[in-house]
Image (cartoon, rainbow, N blue to C red):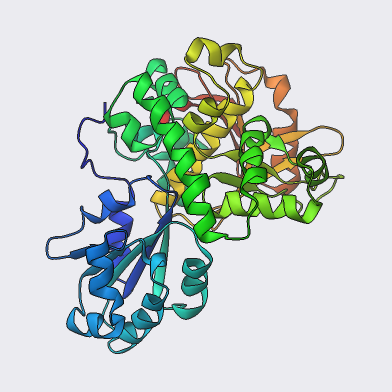
Length: 412
């Protein structure tokens, strides 16, 4: 699959919608997730500059204000954080005709300059899109799953029961093992994937991070990245991580913030609102790409994955990331949490947004024992949720009771 390198990403309709509303749209995301390819899918007439190319950088850097005066419309600037002076020029350019939407698109990996510019210099002038690697559906060239619009529209549980599986177990397993970075899907060999991951991590650690965080202890952070594979899908105790690395607790927190801010790691805070029981307040987290996780765990195929003690956490993280990418691509405003009580009751994912509060439990098994869903039932009842969802590997949706429904991962 994924033979067409210019396959439309699910984020494209959202990008076009925002360009009709805002003068500038910023696309941020991890390196090599497909931001540059997405720019090439813009409507005809856009001029694209890549600031990692010296010729493009020189053309803009001499005088960013003059460049935007000469090019006031349909300009896309890739890796904009490499030229911090560009943000002030963009603000001036936008304000000269602020009512006109669709003037600029900027992209970039996370950096202090990029995020500060979006939140401060360009506040109110720019819409933000966070883009990840290929989703489960994108990797197999499928349209977005209807589930995300049903969630946004607060659809009744009976409509969720009508969702149909779209993928085979083999397709799901293949994506789970390989992850979603586009390049390994284009050149589909296990040898290439291994070498690509090796070079990707080396570039991240030896080029990108020193440029973003010059004072970072690269050796310690390299060990930290290896540790993330063992921590992925777990409750995070900063003190234990700090002791293992031989650093202070604030430094360990900074490492997690860097990993999250560069889109390598997903930070899930604890859901503490309206707590009727004592809850665990430590955050949870996971490596966002399952292929990168499996590379760090030295897993070569699905047989090794299925036998690995981190298999359950890997599956849970892959499904959570699939759901969050689907909601983001659909433009559904949401916040994500995990939930665990001191007594051990646990909800893998709690979604909150205009659609309300939606708890999601994730199981790798095909059949779910209704007795294992007590925590989900209690959460739904105590907080008045419209329903709770279980994502598993069943063949079709199945109602457990009035407010709990199982949906197959194949419907995502």
